[in-house]
Length: 148
View 1 (spheres, one colour):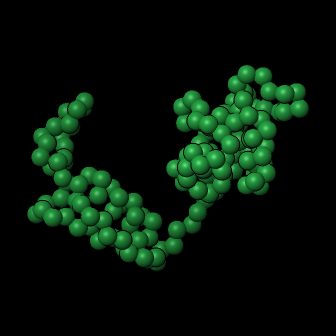
View 2 (view 1 turned 135 degrees about the horizontal axis):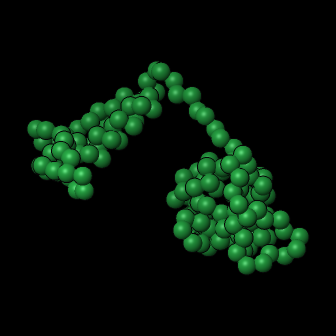
View 3 (view 1 turned 180 degrees about the vertical axis):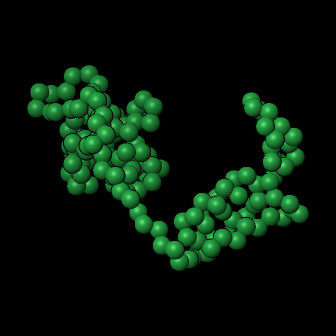
């Protein structure tokens, strides 16, 4: 059996990790959930999945579970140079607009992330101030830092 990390597979295919999980549930990818955030493949299914998505099996850090057949080569340790890194250039111009509903901590962080990606962001809050429940707290656990 071969274990492949879902995030690594999702990045190489170019889809979201939940898409990979849905493909496993519907049977498009013949695998089952493995330990941690991994997928458990038989060696044959792993090679078939790599052929379907035109991936190089050598680029994945995989872990061997049990004994594979003699004709299957499985790497036991991840090698950082085997992973391809991709750097994306973000343009300085505005590429669209987004409305974020809710000015709590999650809404503020989502607004900052989207603005950093080049979107024009409208942050909408029903109350007079932003911060959500965090603005009502005095200190936060475990450091006793000020909540705001």
